[in-house]
Length: 209
Length: 140
Image 1: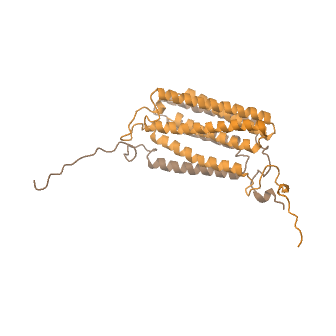
Image 2: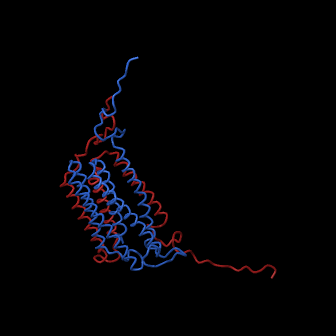
Image 3: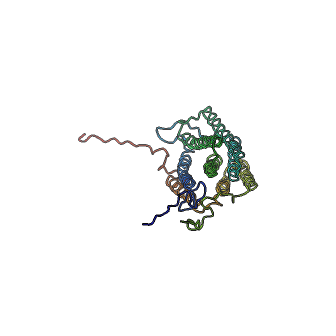
């Protein structure tokens, strides 16, 4: 029986850190896109619930609550500013991805840190907005309209907070070990999705009368 | 054994092992950003629509807002998320998920009269007043 020389796995023709997949797209990236597509359903449900209840603050028998609506308390100039901040964070994120693609890890760290700061500012703005609403008498359980509003914007805020934690981790990790370009790209996908969701929330919840 | 990229995915511009340096340039990203800022400013200006054109004329503003929202959405997804430059499969996955979500929720909202607020008490309006009838005792 002739000896068969087995080729070591490392010598296959897929270079560096990538794995062969039937689609030609890495599993990590594909998983992130599938997750983002499924997250559309989550936010779709929350936005629909808000639309159903926004003008019916005290309409469920037995759950009347306060007649105050969140839309009566909106501070549009302030929310426009926080929207601008989130848009800017998308720009810094894409510049971070661009930097890591070009192998410039120092600049990548700078842009990722800037994204963290801008995300933090957006979250601070949201906390300030919620505090003002509560001060005006609109708590989470004031009525169904308020609950729907806080749940929707709160879930978005939670997504931003998780994004900030991931960005911080990426910056910290990059000091110890070189980050793979794809990891930053996937992180960027998540961050841009958070921005896209805010684009929809800002128009539908805050601006449409 | 040799597996070529063409065997894996014919219509994909992204090949295994490649870094995606073929995306837009930095100046394109800045251009897209300023376009997004301009659209956002236009969106915010519609907030004052009723003070310019009167209270009863907000429907054009709603249509404009939805159009501007969709344009912003597509710009971010295409350029910042690289969908325009990545495999078409990713666009299909994302936009299919989005389409399914929209169809499900538009159908759900339509069944709950959100688009035709015609006073139908079926959803969420106060229930009709309960009328009580007294039955006279038998043999009285």
